[in-house]
Length: 371
Image 1 (cartoon, rainbow, N blue to C red):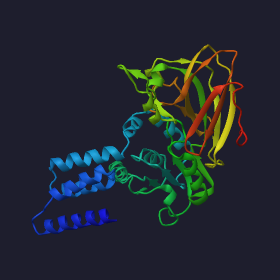
Image 2 (image 1 turned 135 degrees about the vertical axis):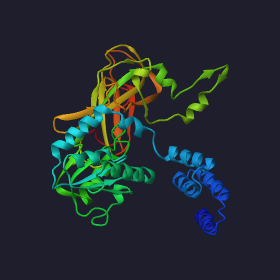
Image 3 (image 1 turned 120 degrees about the horizontal axis):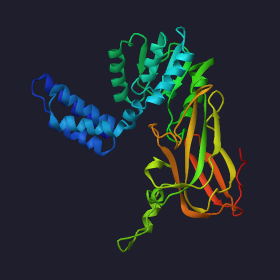
Image 4 (image 1 turned 45 degrees about the vertical axis):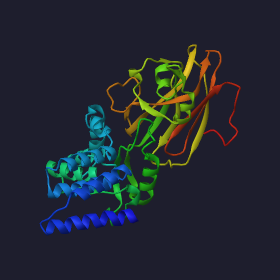
């Protein structure tokens, strides 16, 4: 609270001095850097923006604002916009379902691309929800430049905080979203759609995407394992540093690492976005290795059904997608043989997927039932 008061007083003082013809911007720049150091990137960007309103060429403010925005706006936005196949398939699906009478809700609108596709497909009323304020503001400008600001309204908040009729004139007839990460669930698509079904959509609303599946495969790759584990190096023992290793997945392009698949892909989860909630699920699989080797990790990816018969994927066999694959390293590599199946325990908590792999016969599920 003290920090907020101090930030507010600095802004007020700067405004007052600007009005008096004596802008004192150095203190506000210093405060912007202090906010940045505390991880308050949106507030830092606003502090630098005020300076730029007064002195557009202020180099310290320009650099400070850009650094703050780089921290709050993920870099994948640019890669995603250049993903031509993803955009082509979404455009095709949107053209297939959208009609002029539909009210379309675009959740996680980003640059506004899917909203503008809906407008181009004939929708006359679209609400684009984007929680990141800098992104929402840029989306407004992109949409205005495209000439669609008469039918698209940008709402700068989380969809789970939207209300009818305050943010949405009525329940929407169509939901479009791409709130997925390399493992499908990581951006919260399950709770996001479940909330929308209950609070923001008509009972017969069309949901795009309509469902998805997650596939997993055992992988041998010392290169991938080194991204999350360390041992003896330069004459020193760094194994204690592994206490900081991630026990969850990270994204990586398999083709950039020497690797060998040790099993066939298996489907571990299937989702119906018209019905499923974020309720945790768990399943166990017996996975027969197809070749002998050392299992260092589980690689997994999704197939996303946009509309029936039209899907996209970030499988390793699709190198041009902007999505990478999800990789979860095992705590300790496991030696595998074709005649010695592994038990693969897959679970998700509604947002993140986690795997446990052990040699067959060592362990069985004891908590809950497999689904």
